[in-house]
Every structure is written in C-alpha cells, then in structure tokens.
Amino acid sequence: MALSDRIEAMPVIADGAAAVARAGALLPAIAMRAARTEAERRVPDETIAELREAGLFNLVTPRLFGGSELGFADLVRVTAELAGACGSTGWVYGVLAGHSWLLNLFPIAAAREVFGDPHALTATVFRLGGEVVETDGGYRLTGGEGRFCSGIDHASWVIVGNAVKRADGGMEPRFFLVPRTDIEVVDDWFTIGMRGTGSRSIRIADAFIPAHRSCSLKDMLQGTAPGAEAHARAIYRMSFADIAPFSIIGAPLGVARAAVANFAASLARSLDGKEDLAIAEQSASLARLAEAAADVDAALALVLADAAMIDAAGEALSPVERARIPRDWAYAAQKSRYAVTRLFEASGGSGIYDGSAIQRLWRDVNGAAQHFAFTWDSAMPSYGRAAAGLKPATFALKGRG
Image 1 (tube, rainbow, N blue to C red):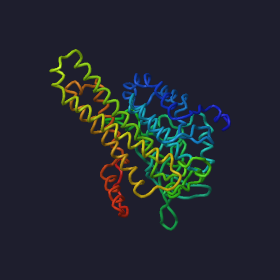
Image 2 (cartoon, rainbow, N blue to C red):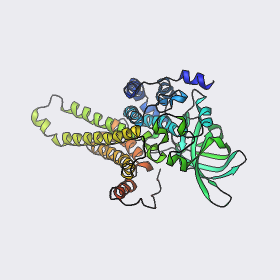
Image 3 (cartoon, rainbow, N blue to C red):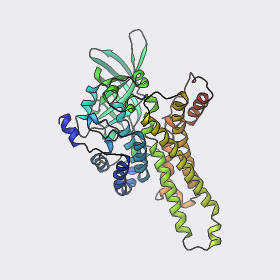
Image 4 (cartoon, one colour):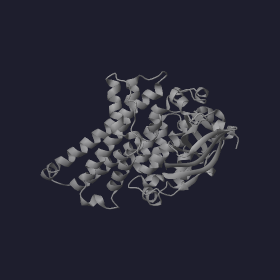
C-alpha cells in the first residue's frame, strides 16, 4: 500500500474529547476480555484491531503521516481510560501509541517504511545488550538481548537502544529501528502483575541496520533529531528525556481510578439499607476511600498539567520544569500504588481470591509502578537539586525494569 493510501485509511481524531469518547466505547469489550488477557499473557488480537480501527494508535502520529497529531495530555487520558478496564491493555496501548513519537524523530525514510504498512505498530527496548559497529551503509548489531518489550506480540518493528563501538574505542549511544523478522522473542513473561502486557525479552543474534534506521541519542535529547523539523508541532522537537514515560504513566493512574471505583461500589453494596449507626461504624473505610480518591485525583492532575506544558511548549524548559516532570511521573505512579494498597488492605479476606477484581488491580498497579521511570529514589533528589539551584548529579541510579 502506498503511503498516500495509508494516510487516507487512517481515521483522524479531531480532539482529545473525541479520543476519550472513542476509547470509552471500547471499554465494555476490553473489560470483558481482562481475565482472558491476563490468562493468555497478551492483549487479544481483536482488542488491538478495535483500537486500530478507532484511530487511537495514531493519536500522536504527525499529520504528515495521516495521524491525528494530538498531544500527550490526550494520550495520558486515553491510556488511563483503557487501563481502567484492563491495566495490561492500557499499558500496551500506551507503549504502541506513545512510543511511535520516537519513530518520528528518525530520518523520514524510516518513518515512511513503517507508516507504509496500514497495520504496523512499533514496540521499544530502551536498553539492548550486544555490540553495534558501523559498517558500509549502516550498522551491524550482534548478540543483542533486552527485556520488557511490551506489545511485541503485535509489533512489526522494534526501536532498540544501544551504543555504536567506534574504532578509537569510544561509544556513541543511538537508537535503531529493527524489523520483527530479525527478532527472536523469549517467552519469559511470568510476573506478579501486568501479566497481559506480554512484555517478553527479545534477542537479535545478527542484524544489519541501514543508516536511515538509526538516530543519535544526543540529537533526541537536544531536540535536533533528523525528523524533528518535518513536523509542525513542537512536541516533535522536545527532548526525549522529557517525553517518553508520558506514554505509560496513564496505566497505573487508570488502574488506581478503577480500584477507587471498585472499592466505592463494594462499600455501597455492603451498606445498602443499613441503619445510620452501622454506616457510622464504617467511617474509617469511608475516610480511607476519600483519601485514596484524593491521592489519585491529585496525581492525575499533576501529570496532566505537565503534559499540557509539554504540548504547549515552544521553547526549552527551565531546569526546574524539566526536573518536575520525572518527579511527577514517580509521584503519580507511587501514589497510585499506595492508594490501591490501602484499599486492598481494607478489602478483607475475600480480596485475596483470584476472582476478586481488587487483587488484580493491586497486582497490576504494583507491576506498573516498578518501571524504572517511576523510581522515587532518583526522581525526588533530582528535583530537590534543581529546586535548590544545584547542578544535576553526575551519577544516576540504574533502572530496574
């Protein structure tokens, strides 16, 4: 299919409200498949097809390639909506829709290759092992192994991060676009939560990567990547470090909102028809519900404010603004984790059964909050340094996942 035909075939969504409405229409079917998604350890093909047909995967795809070219605040809202019905589905959607933003930083020829296929989706592995050397016309990757490739079951391409080994011994960090046909999937995704994401490990034994399928991390961080100037919106010229986790932070927030709703409904059932005294005896549980709801609402508001700042930004962010974004990612994920945990604690013995919704929500939010981008112990000191006018630390905690 020619790119022009692909563009005509892609549904364009007018605005964020329309995007959330389209996601909302899919929620009953996604919720119905939630148990199956977890049991099969992958998002069902029909769910992926429904998201594609609704145009939701193209939310932040540039108009140049037929996308809706909406913002990251809209992406967070849609991801949270989907995650409220199924945490794994929300996570995979966020990765496959949001990380496509990375693709638009590559040379235009690479983006045209991917968007030329009407069904193509792109997954990511930010840290891939192995060795990369420069060769005629591109790069040679050998012995590559990496974990946490969310959405690999549905991806035609994977963006991987590695470093090119130069002749002088120096290393240049870059990202590479690799076709699924060059990748072996390792079925090792057996986890406590987010089981349906199918975030399996991958191996790339030996692959030639043409030069146009690579992009320098330095350019991505500085907003000077090859594809940046081809698109109208400033979000395609923002630093990679300020953007990527907006793709997934909606998932723990959506799961937490679902837990609040689940606990509220459970309380309502248990108190239905009760006398005032019996209701008053549950005041601690009612207060626990209120606190959890406030924490999740506050966390979502912070993230949406940051995303709106990114969407509107036309110039570089200040050091404090840049440090605030990862602070709020970590804050939101961890507040979501603790809010759901407090509700799970009050759910009683029935909450530990596999058939209980609250236990799956608790497992999923804990799984999501383990992502390295949500690490409290690095995000908080970094913000404190920026707020105090200190230089950034010269070291960083290594990601756990």
